Image (spheres, rainbow, N blue to C red):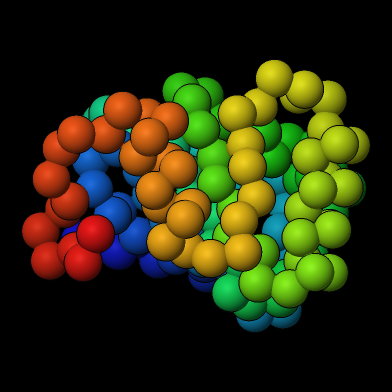
Length: 134
């Protein structure tokens, strides 16, 4: 399992197909931060086609960032783990507000179900990255 850290969060490569994103507590996610994440995905040059947003921390988004959340090139499925009702409602509002109505995105209340759904959606048959519990 590889971990890539940026000032606003970390990206954990759970396997060759999807990455888990954890934004740090109190961050306001901006378009520039999304650009850094996009650069990470592009530079990775792999089979990465899924993202698991683990909302374990409380953070916010600028309006511009909210509009760009679903516009990640090459991403076929996005799972979001929202641990509270408020987090779920905020996530669902952002999904509805976005101009990208064709996202393949689903919100879960636990990480295990989110990972299972991503595996199913992406047809992930490969073994997890070294050292991963999944």
